[in-house]
Length: 347
Image (cartoon, rainbow, N blue to C red; front, side, top):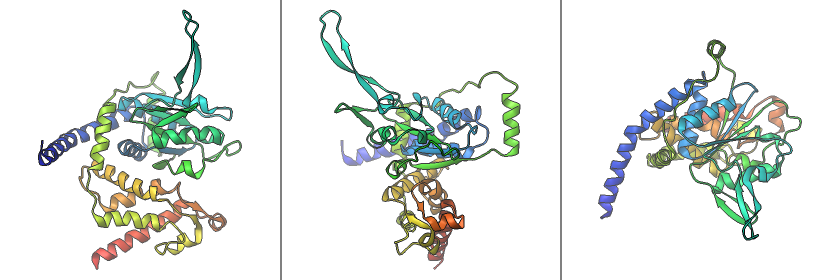
């Protein structure tokens, strides 16, 4: 088969996937909305995480349905789901699994057998991840980056797709272990789950105080389809000018970079990594596809800058003293870069 024919098949395959893509995404949203009221933006970010093949950190107050949202989404996706409640006494083997000795009762021969932990699932909910010590948090690092875990020197592969959706509570910081920067950098997004609006909260009360149990959520896709959608996302073209905007945004978050505006130089200690640039572009590709476009725009980049970068930028003591948050700094950075982009296009 010639390369031209192969390329044409790839194009036909992509077009067939595009036709089913929007229907599948709409069906997933419909199923999730049976249980989750409001939070449409958070649901979109979780879908983007899925399409990119990344991991998501969900920050929210208690009672904002973080756990319920992840469980509902996993069901709608038709994926295997496991949940780990992170506590101070959780051991790494409680996450990864461990080897046990099994004896054959007929021969008396003993062998080591690996018993997989809850890490071996398509969707892993790491509930209150900042409540467990660093040794156990580190057990997730290899899995998140390499899709494998090593136990007693033996590497065990995790079947894709694999997503870690971790929750953390922004209050009650006593007795918590903040995630190290190396682990934070492995999360595609840090999504803030805020309180509902008054109308949405009223709908929650009316819906869930008049019925017993949760509505039944039907699976809309399969693991194999999700892997094909991930391939499709990577085929979305990006213009060099849009790629340059992503690079400039991330470079602008570093206080020593010439592109950094004054607000970054004053309030930021460390900026975002190169991984942030790659994640920002990939997430923008997925966003474009979800919105029915087969190309990435500058608006896709700027719309995702905060959730991609807020956990990768470390503010300094001047920011704390002046009451300036990382989100405040990034908002001004995005406005500055977007304004420069518009000015360059007009010129």
